[in-house]
Image 1 (tube, helix red, strand yellow):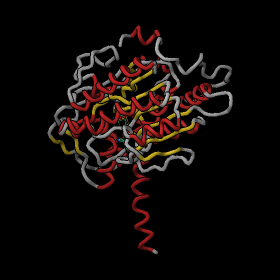
Image 2 (image 1 turned 180 degrees about the vertical axis):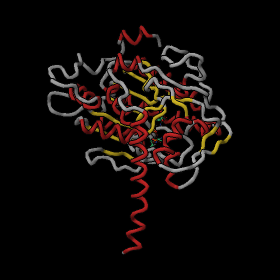
Image 3 (image 1 turned 120 degrees about the vertical axis):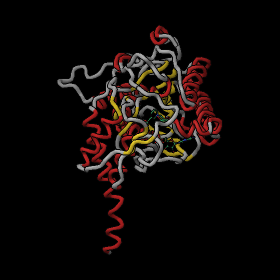
Length: 368
Ligand SMILES: NC(=O)c1ccc[n+]([C@@H]2O[C@H](COP(=O)([O-])OP(=O)(O)OC[C@H]3O[C@@H](n4cnc5c(N)ncnc54)[C@H](O)[C@@H]3O)[C@@H](O)[C@H]2O)c1
């Protein structure tokens, strides 16, 4: 999709009228509160909140986003099969349907909820899992995603926002940070599936007059991320340090990523819901950080004297990744606000508390 097409907004009726943030305010509200104000501006005059369905709302990024949406008084329906929940209970106000997002049950729930916007975050498997069985990945993830897009449109959604991956879409690039105008060149089955999702949502949206936007996230990290999976070096390193095992790096650690904190991503999701932007947009910091410096930062935070174990580089991983946030800044008025050092500190401290909380019931049980 060309840049000009972003500007024309000739697609579906956009959700919003003119949006202004904080006009008449004596001081600037924090970024996520500004997004909340914007969502409130979209709401009907009858006091009802915007109706938003979030697939994968029980997951890592989903749970943070749902909390932020609820704070805006939005009415939220979560569709999640609970195959990989974050463990954090969702706010009481949220309606939850336990189903595969591409299923008949999900389609029925959407038809009865009648969302104005669908935010699609549900997804299974990462780069290595998809590489191991690409056909299964298509069946487990892409097929459900396309089914969900179709159900959302049939249910009358005016906008669909879907999670994509900047790290997996652009492939290996000589010139960074990558901009949305770069030709997609995924090097993995996961990246190919994410690009397919982008194409499907844009195609179905164009056909049915629904406005659509794919969010190309950087490497998202923060509280509630699963530290036992294949991806998420920050969560995995926190867990290893807390378990007293040495951190592990695949490759020499000089590979780089664009690490973006989860509450920044949640506020980007909220901004995307209420914006008119269509096509694709990077959600990232524009900072290129090596895996070595991340792991060293966590070791320092843990106050431990441990040596990192270096393992062979994994296939289908790019050497460098960094995404330009310029389009998000311009069109969503979104920018990442959490510095890497502050994000690492907050994440480490959450993992410490979480680790302690997991141990506490055993201690009190033995005392009792
Ligand atoms: N975490 C990252 O660094 C990152 C980076 C780029 C893109 N993304 C994308 O962002 C989205 C959210 O990622 P996350 O890190 O929160 O993942 P997550 O695994 O924590 O959350 C996904 C949620 O979706 C649910 N789910 C999975 N398949 C489902 C299905 N078919 N139907 C209904 N629910 C289903 C899971 O139970 C889980 O609650 C995904 O699309 C992911 O590919 C994440």
